Image (cartoon, rainbow, N blue to C red; front, side):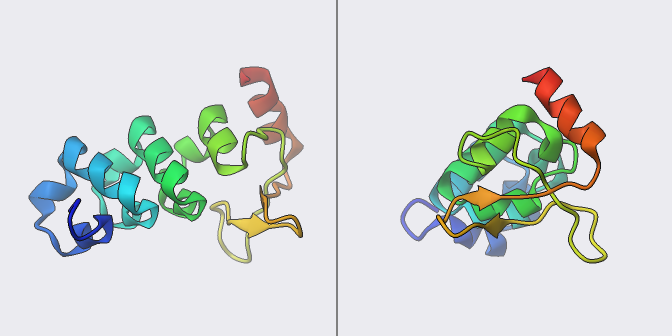
Length: 121
């Protein structure tokens, strides 16, 4: 994976998609590989943070629980945990958006979620 790139995890046997060390190496190299890892590792904070560091767009493949984690939101939003998030058309998961400056932004309609995140940080 290191030699050919983390995206090659997609073609690997399921066994390797459950191996945390292999997955960490893959997502650190190619964040969007998070799409192809075992669900249990999509819920692993260390794995998701490594993927976000490599590519913030990997956020869409993180578990729903981690999408509300303050550290994950900071990594996704360039350190801004108070950014509002939105629900995309017919999709309750958060969606990657960029503003004019190129920074990641997101919006949520429910103000309670924002307040919960502020309290946790």
